[in-house]
Image 1 (spheres, chains in turn orange, purple):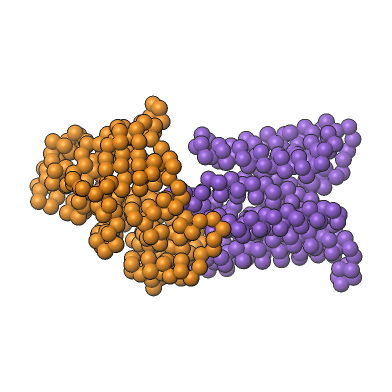
Image 2: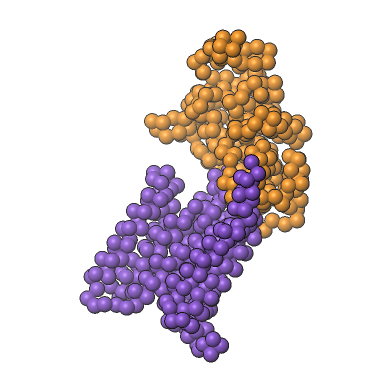
Amino acid sequence: MSDPREPIIRFEHASFGFPGLIALKDISLAIYEGEFVGVIGPNGSGKTTLCRAVLGLLTPVEGHLHIFDCACNELRCHHRAKIGYLPQKGVVDRNFPVTVLETVMMGRYGALGLFKRPGRKDRDIAQEALAQVGMDSHKNHALGQLSGGQQQRVFIARALAQQPKVLILDEPTTGLDITAQHNVIELVQQLHDELKLTVLLITHDINMIRSRVDRLVLLKTRLFAAAPPKDVLKPEILHQVYGKDLVITEKDLVIVEDYHHHH
Amino acid sequence: MLDLLAYDFMQRSLLAAAMVGGLCSVIGVFVVLRGLAFVGAGTSHAAFAGVALGYLIGWPPLLLAIVFGLATVWITGWVEERGRMKLDVSIGILYTTTMALGILFIGLMKSYNAEVYGYLFGSVLSVTPEELSIIGALTVLVLGLLLLFSKELYFIAFDQEMAEASGVPARQIFFLLLTLVALTVVVSLKTVGAILVFAMILIPASTAYQLTHSLATLTLYSATIGIFTSIAGVLISALWDVPSGPAIVLLATTIFFIAVFFSPKRLKRTRLAHSH
């Protein structure tokens, strides 16, 4: 997407990892405000590294990364609070003694800063975030008693309680049943549309997101493509990354071996 | 029993036990939730090595206990952060090394020193007014810092990476927690002793963990259990003339097993299992 606006996140020939073990190499990529970007690639392709970099948890070993016009190694705590994050693991210790509201209130802590106690305003923001994900009636429940899909909603609410500009979700549908997967992606789309959030969604499920995202970022250590889905989901590009022949139909993306097997 | 309470030494012991019980059980919440249980054990043995060295070279034992305790937790935290080694392995090595140092220092002493063993096994009934004021000052300091940073501490206990990503200075808070664990251990050495202080950190918080789904309630329950068992343990110790450390710890353990048995979480799981 060529966009006249200033990018909110800008990678310039950035590499991440350790000498001898580079997770992402020579990435140049600009992400614009309000974009819905899907990040895809095989296991170990650097998707999570890309996330952690945008969160300011990693600094490039080469090149530059600017977030909100701030070099990522100078990213201040109040900037970090502007990036909501749903980490990959998804499954929490079922006995961790925390209520749904306590979990979402944690989203306020970074923005509040040290020494300040959360007040009524923070509680209101947290309750509103819970309402946005449709979990307000569960606020006093134990987090561990919820289903996987409900827990993901609560974690999305925690990210929203930060009142972020950017929302990063690392494989939010992993381990969920098919209805819950659909509901979570639907919710993300709705939040993107209504709150004008910039969304980075990492997933393996290309079929689920291809009709929703503005652009797909295809990674395998290097950046193979960053373009609208129709320009990325081409057999020759996908073959380079996944090493298998893929058939792309109107709606689905199928590995050829499986395709023959099933038909 | 009321006669006992009239004695100065008894009043001092009960006050010391209540403070140590409260302190250990509150920091225990963060230790249990952050998965640092073994760090408590390692630190207490390191602190004991500091005490032994203090008696050997004639330096203040508590000062060296703090130095040894802090060195242990900071090295442990640094190793974990670097991801070089699993936390239980690094603390296991430090734990046994400092214990070996402690035994070595005791061996190097020319004569038997009963006071050193007081720090190993605890002797709350012999707490002096000076020790009581040190315990009081450190208790206020540690509890004050825990209160001041409680929201950040809860967050890193739940998910440290998430806390860092959302703008909490998580690394610094983690090292603060480790530092407070070391101070708590040193404060508690004289009352419950190096071997049992670990139990006072672990058991009240683990008991409370069985009973609630809320972080705030968990902390309140843990503090109540910690203070109650410490005071009751000292009274049992004085009435029946048994050592105070074991009295406190065994009482806390009994309450722990009762809590596990009647845990709403466990009962709920059992009901669910039967219904399927």
